[in-house]
Length: 467
Image (cartoon, rainbow, N blue to C red; front, side):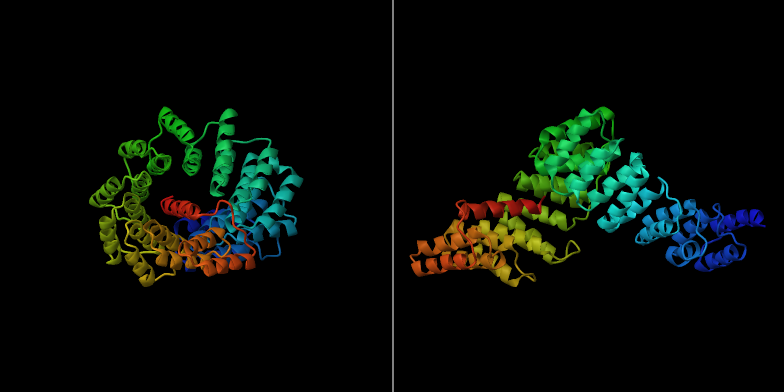
């Protein structure tokens, strides 16, 4: 009977199972005719449950909440399906069920449960799985090893990721790419690039995922030479400049100060999206080519692309670095009026305060700070302070400096500026008050702390807006 019914059930699952009611009818037949152990039916039933969002309520109880232990193949199918579903937390539960019920695991089991654990950032549970992998000798499998690398890289634990990498007997381009990407995501761009160079020296050629991640590290570290090598490699391999690869190249050239090369890449691309345009505008903003950035901003609109919040930050930053206060006001007014379909964020306000403060409109900048629907950030008060200091407006400088002290009470530079402000005006009692406040808070004047330090920090924050 089972041999006769199984093909019929599979046919129904693949062709007629369109609703939850259909699936529950088929489930009743599976239970009634004892087809639960049938490994040919299981993957089709699990797939149908996935498509109808019934994995947890139908597939899980059928195969896991049952007295008889399911076959390894069925468990692996559940592990895989849950790990790619909206409920990846069930995948480790299936894995634990296998261990408790002595259901054998194999090299297919580990990548699926490790993927779920990586997505859930459950490193401690992952370490337990790691111990079992080592005990059973599965680390020799490159797919299992790569899944472990991904677990630790996803959690930002590059120390354990590196340890696993060094222990792997076999590594492929995916192994290297995970390490390169992990260091990049952790902000360790130099280590990411070292891994890339080491990969090349071992004769492993990068794939497109590798180069996209490496280009991001080049952009973060300013490693133009490696970025240029990648560009040449891409051309040599005959790869198309698709949206992801092309945008990554433009972003790298823009952040490495060679936006003109990025523009050539842009023109060579057959397809662009909003991220591509943003990379161009950001690159022009960083090169202080404000008028060009605005020209490209309007070209973007003319070609039917809807600017997003990042676009507006980039174009406002371009106005900041090129002193285009009138244009900045105009674009910001359009943003406030709802032209772009979203309201300005604190970053957009920060750009405008910076622009106004640098353009000697500090009173207008202060009004914007007081009227904006957000609490001012350190970068906003820092921008106002830098503008006030440049114009010798000691009264507003004092207000801004005290706000910075409130927001970052352990930053010595702000106390130093306050002390200098009071000293310039001969307010020695206030100088002493600031020094006492520093002493009470356990702070000492850093030799490098000065107004120039604040200006450098302000410049860095401004550049981070377009990073």
